[in-house]
Image (cartoon, rainbow, N blue to C red):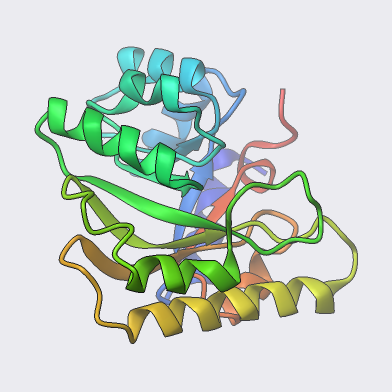
Length: 222
């Protein structure tokens, strides 16, 4: 199957679901991204800052770049001038730095708050139970250059489909709960980024608005 036909089958699958595709292009060369771009697709996800900045410099400027990986505070300045969305804001420290760099570039940067939903301790994110308290306590109010547009979560890497479904469902419930709160002006809750190549069908069922797909479009990672 070609990249074009893979993208086409995803677009058909997503039609009418309210969910959009982020094509995860990490480790793939510019030529492969251009192959996808020439089909009319322009929303790509990267998880390493160095690789993202190199691709941004060499590829068309109307590409919508999503930073989907863990982001270190000292690297925010490298992507703040152009990134379209940061999916993995997992601490107030990181939010503070993004706000600082967004101010520097006079930009409003769309961000998702990453929530820890998996059983693996190695995954990052805010603790589900404390996030609502943090929002109602005003911990995010000062980030006037952030547009906090929703949540992101990564399910446990497992063959247990019901465990994955339960994790995604819990994240959707948290999303709905936060959406019902009296939110600060910098909140515009509409995106729920969950689901990858191995679990995107479950994620769509449970209300995802953004799925992050790499290998099912581009083949195994390099």
